[in-house]
Image 1 (cartoon, rainbow, N blue to C red):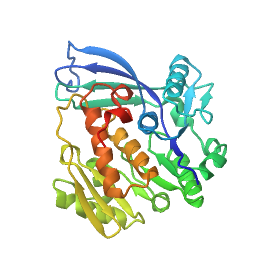
Image 2: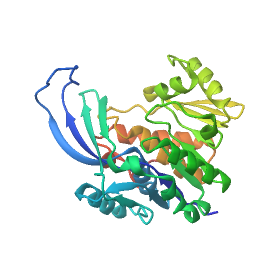
Image 3: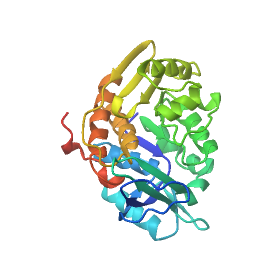
Amino acid sequence: MSGKIVVIGSMNTDMVINSERLPLPGETVVGGKFMMNSGGKGANQAVAAARLGSDVYFIAKSGNDLFGRRAIEQFREDNINTDYMCSDSDLPSGVALVLVDENGENSILVASGANASLSPSDIDAAEGLIADSKIVLMQLETPVETIEHAARMAHRYGNTVILNPAPACPLSDELLSNIDILIPNETEAALLSGIEINSIEDARTAAIEIARRGIRTVIITLGSKGAFIKDGDEFHLVNARKVKVVDTTAAGDTFCGALAVALTEDRGIVEAVEFASRCAAVTVSRPGAQMSIPCRSEIID
């Protein structure tokens, strides 16, 4: 088995407005700065893994439009293999509208477009690639039935299967039984466990509850409080790096991509989470999604 990372997921073009605060329902907030940036959870994670030095293949679907063509060009500039990407002639590429306040908190609305048509047959077309890879990394901005199909296939070939269960939604035991590492944030962990997370002890209880569904390793990201790990019968807390937060967009995606990279380098789970936390800290210190994701040379290892 090679050290390849296969990322299966979404690609979007982010249209971002930074303003003093986020608008309330029905309110218009005037003033702000606009920028357009490539995004999508799958694309962000693929870019993070590639910039941090791994051999990355991206399985995704775009529209046959300017946004899709531009994104593919950028993936290639980041040395991401796009041979298993395809375009949908009927649906546009995905678009996300992102609002960011002065504290770096964001609110995001996504029009999935072609992401919603990524199908099990698209995964079947990449079976040989998956069979020859070490890690398969996925999220939930593409159809769940496609993710379930990919998880079964990757598990059958002995890959390490990582799922970032975002955006939050209920997940079947059948899907989770094929996942090796689950990386939810506090909101996602609360939905999966039924336990509201207000403390580290809550995170421990939630991780135990989630793991009962057949997952060996649960990593709950806790923002500025760090990341809580349940790995088999062991528990660890990795503290977050203290940085000035500019924009939290893509921080979780950088964490996931970086974790996958560290695992291909045969690091233990705690060391891998420490590396992922260092990478995510760089991301939150800069604006934007993919434009904020660091290269390996920027990480003190």
